[in-house]
Length: 295
Image (tube, rainbow, N blue to C red; front, side, top):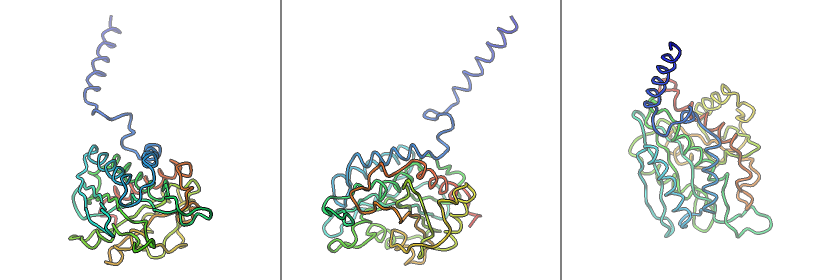
C-alpha cells in the first residue's frame, strides 16, 4: 500500500511539472545552437533557388527570414530602397536593450558565376556564399538568451552585397545603405559570410578591427576551435563590414575566403556542413552573452 501511495504522489508531481514546461520547448535544445537546425535553413534557401537582387526568389527568401524572426519574437523592420532601378530590401531584427551591436549577413546571391571556367552565365546557388551566414543568424535568433546580453542586438540581413563589378553595381549596397542611414553608433559590427565550408579555415582579415578579432578568436580558442579559427592575417576583403569601418565603427568579417567554390555554379549545399555552422554560431552566441562589461 505504501509503495502505491509513493508511486501515486510521484505521478502527481510529474504531471504538475509537465504543466509548467513552456509549449514548443524540448529537452534543452532550444538553448543551444544547433548546426543541424542551421543547415536546414541553408537547404530551405537553396530549395528556393539562386537569389540575385530584384528576383522573386530573393523576395521569397526575405519573406522566409521575416516569418521565422517574427515567430521567434523579434521585432522586424525593413529598409526598402532602389538601386539601378531594382527594388531592394534590408531586414533588421531587434531585441534587447543597451548599446547596439550588429550581427549581419547578406541574403542575396551573385547573379553570374564569373569564376566558373566553363560557363559564367548561370547564377550562383550561394549555399555558402549567402545562405550559410543567414542560417547562422536565424539559429542565433532562436537560441540567444537576450536577458544575458547587455546590448540591444540587431540581426541584419543585407540585400545586394554580391553584385559588385557587374554593370554599375558596387559591392555591399545594402550595408552601405544602412551605414549611411544610422542615427545611432553601434558598439561593434560582426559580419558572417561564407562560414559553412566543410574544410573550414577562418583567418583574421586585414581591414577588420584588431581588438574585436582578438575577442572573437579568443572565444573560439576557449571553445576548442583554434584549428579552424586561426589568429593570423591572410586576406583583405571588401565585404559588409567595410561601410561601418568607413564610419570608424569597430567591425569585422568572419569569412572563409579560401572556399574554392566561391562565385561558381558549384557553391551548392553539399559543400556546406552543420559542424562548421555550429562552430561559428556558438562563438557568436558566447560573444553576445558575455555581457557589456567584457568590452
